[in-house]
Image (tube, rainbow, N blue to C red):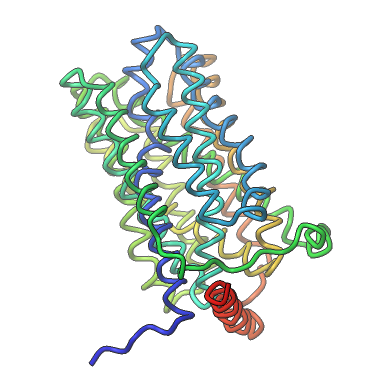
Length: 414
């Protein structure tokens, strides 16, 4: 007879599953601009620099929302922030092509803001309810994101070929709405870990902690590097002139497929390899793949380079979030507001920088040097002396489960 999950285990599992489900459509929305960039550029007559500014609009909206997300989590809880983000992203995607360019830009910023609310809340929630296996659980969460990111270029190519781009955006919005409804219908017995009271927030943050600057740089550079590479690879493939439009639109899927596979494999590798060493090895592969893309001239070399780069970067972001939780403990949700804000600034700035460099030098190969430099910088940041997994981290797991049980019991008695 199978063992019945304990009352303290069930909420953690349900909350993790809710976060996993939300990250599939979030993955589609996050990378949407990359494969759709040629179509949007043609629709609105944009050059490389102007097209790159669309990424900036998305991440300006996202950055603004990340700052608000931390406050919202403390006031209303993790799920409320996730639901609010999904609702805002649904509206932005559904209306993106409903008017002229300015309406589209506003909608891009709106769905970016939705992602800014939901993504930090989901990541910190999963880290909080899975303290014994933070890196593994966060890799699963980001695997779900990668699954959405992988499907996006194929769906985009299908929509563009059949002139159903508006319908594509509306279907993604509908999927987000479906996940939102599922979270709304979760039973009251599924309770969240309690967050700090607003009056004690600042006291728990050690702003002079030696990990602040390396983590801030990693959050800023990683998201910008991934977006700059994944966002421009379809346009780069199309510029080579050696493949069809449909094939060039699908090339980002090779990057995101290998990203997804790497995140699926990572929990098994982490049983044998220290997470910091896994990140270092991955970043060496990432540099090799991104460097290979710059010198690519054929379809095969583009696909191989994209796959190597994706597999190399796969575990870096989940491990970085796990390090945030490990280094700062209960204060991680507070420091996380700063870190996720920086990640969104980098996510908007580096793809735009790639577009500016490409326009100035007249070739996208120059623009792809931006994410290559980003991967190299992250490798050196991972040489930092990171904190090891201490017994108190494991004890924190027992305390977290006790808090969940206490919260659940108090709700039952009310």
